Amino acid sequence: LVIMHPGSAGSSLRWPAKRFAELSDLIVEKAKVQVLVSWGPGEEDLAKYFLRLVSLPVFSLPKGMDLRSLAGIYKQGTLFIGNSTGPMHLAAAVGLPVIAIFSPIKANNETRWGPLGENHTVFKPAVELCDSCPGEKCQYFNCMDRVLPETVFDRVCDFVLESAQSEGLKPGEGVS
Image (spheres, rainbow, N blue to C red):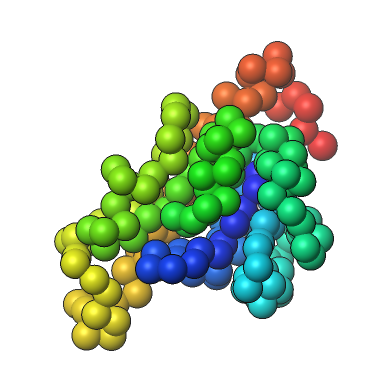
């Protein structure tokens, strides 16, 4: 089970929902792994938008989950994929490997705000670091869109294979 959290609050730029949806479809179709979309207060519209964008079936968290229940669900996952956000830290805290997508804003850097622990990967756009996001005035406007789902999917496959091997499965086994 891959858990995706497309939301983020505060000053962190988000990877676009369409990119999360493209990645979700790759995971379901090619890796044959189920995806669960995670969302929190104020992110219901984003979660619904994500669910409209995906082509293949995914699961969604029920409304109004408390933190303890969310942590319990995260513990059942194989991998968490999300932006720089509180749920990313919760996933890392319960021992779930994390793929985090960070912005190039200096104050939001992964050294300070990245997931703690081992077995995590951070992606960010290959653009110059900036002090803040000037929006459309930036030469790299929509920089978060430059992180490609296919690139992230390659790392997802590594995690899924590692997880299967730790469960004693060989490539091609245990896949329906």
